[in-house]
Image 1 (tube, one colour):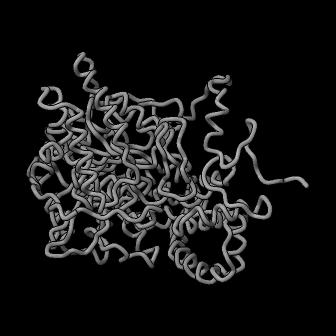
Image 2 (cartoon, rainbow over the protein chains, first blue to last red):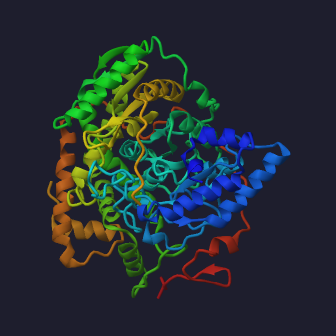
Image 3 (tube, chains in turn brown, blue):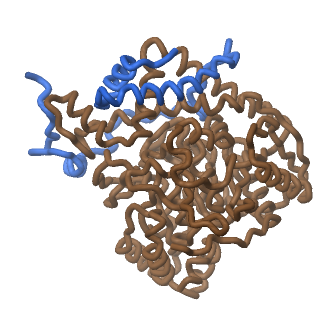
Length: 490
Length: 95
């Protein structure tokens, strides 16, 4: 049955429509692949019974001729999306055995389109991390290995389970979320395609909150077209999220394969950071060359406040997190660790429920919001955020989209950046500006490192211009023509 | 603006996270490392710049102030660490 798990989402949907196979067959093949890949630790919960019931219902719909856009397609769901009746943990001990009595809007949209849920995917605790090592369930292992090495590599984070599962063929595509790079960096580390849409495209309702002004859902898939198909079904206005955009959702897949002739591509000089490996530089030049030969005009642009994006992010995101995570008090749901009085119960609950990185960010957030520091740190960061956003506004007068590397390196070894939080934060140096400005950003695999590991390039677009990103990405995907997939060792 | 042990203790208290005394020096060192790196924001000229609180170009939508949901006490209590007779059970707060 291995052939069924090698299909793209598009090919699988075509096969289902042509009745080459049933959703139950397709789902069983993926459940078997999941069972055989537990060494990757990509899933924190497998839901085979629900999956087979959903698949059978899908086959019945196909039989009666009213199939949805993703009908019968088995997907993985990042365990940050609340799923009705199915345990949702955010990879934190503090949520315990929380079983949501409601469904997130994004997953509800996917089930409305007929998709099948295979299970819940591992992530960094509360999506805080770039290596999946902060998960209470232990890290995900990247299905890719360096040539001739059996060293365990990170799939990136926070959507490491989503990226690893898609790369290893455990699901056709997966949901993910991105607050500072959590879709795009794991996509780059696993040779997959990931897009964080414009802030407000996907409803945040029912997604466990980290930093609400930055959090945005999006898909990870194996091809540009597959990511477009997923995004079309995930998006849409939702009255339950006050920042949800009331705009039409285009058929994003129709942009894949469109001509990009005449588009102006900005290359920001500030993204040539010190110590960037030569092969990333080479990959970037290669990407520029592909777009030039497709008829794009390449212009150098300046985003002068780029280097301040990460420090600003590490004020804004922890500040919002410290506020959002105040709800975990052990009273209404999740873990409770009793103390001798109410305050001690709060303190014990939060001390044993949160992991080290989450605690660190809550402390930083509380500090920068506390009396005497609010203006110096929090307000200052909000002003720098405006500067960063203005940089992009200026850039859009000169170009239609921006091309950069996704991450400053290929996937690194587990434990390699564990002792120095700032070294870990630097993974998001190229992705975080996009969250601060609310723009769409897409990562696609563009080549392999000298060690045989995937490397990604990022395309950044104007607000609501995901379509152009899909057109550009499909041109580059074709030019890169990457055939390599991780060789199963698990 | 270095974060000392007393500041970490205060912030941990504000955050309602129990941190054992012996963990505070190492935590202060980690937090200082992060805050020192953040200090570079002081270099940015932000005079007259409006703080950016939202990237959404539309205003916040309004709706009628009416009940749209409710009557789900059993569902809401289903995840409670402790519940009794339709209520959350919490530690005593009034002596």
